[in-house]
Length: 250
Ligand code: PEP
Image 1 (cartoon, helix red, strand yellow):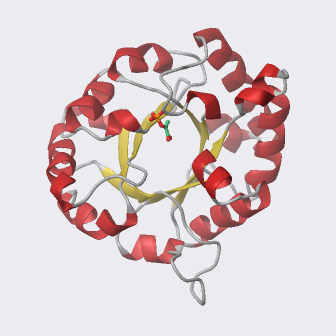
Image 2 (cartoon, helix red, strand yellow):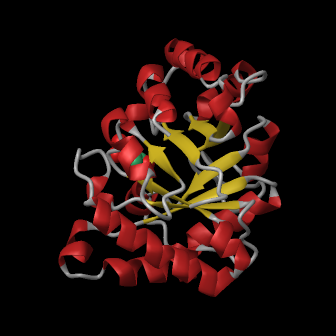
């Protein structure tokens, strides 16, 4: 979308140990090019690497975020981390509502919205993931699902500054399958209209990322589609070379 600064975001999921910190170092160095003024870059490593990753990116435009947060600030929630804890590690973003969280942990739209609100309270940008399953797509329910997920997962206080939408068809994640460019265009135009209806000018300026089997070979053409304001990348964000090739194809 013209006037929107695209975002290239990597999601390492449950991958990455200290041995992979050299990949983060290489990414932090590799994005130090003039393109970084036009394109924002973000990596979401596992929480165990968050603090050391932000230190490695101290003098780099590469931002660091987390993959999930609890909806509360602190308390008796063993194993969870809060948005404040992410901010305390100098993280700037948090992914909420990834389909793997919705699936593995039965997260609902309403919980995802509470997590996004918690992110905003901690001054983090919430990357809210939405997208249809294959069964929903086959039943021609894609746009209904996106409408419902936007309505229920995006908080009232969402702005173009504090919120990013990531459209990730569940069947396209980690499968090598992607929708056609025209299907992506239709979905993104629909989400744009829903966001504008809901949030006005903030919805018009909000970034809508595409995610699902984005690779160096298809990133450029996907990012050229109208209303695609960047990409959320899983597998191809694990290696600095792939991530930087996607960045360069912007
Ligand atoms: C993701 O999990 O956000 C994702 C898009 O994964 P992949 O790029 O591996 O399909």
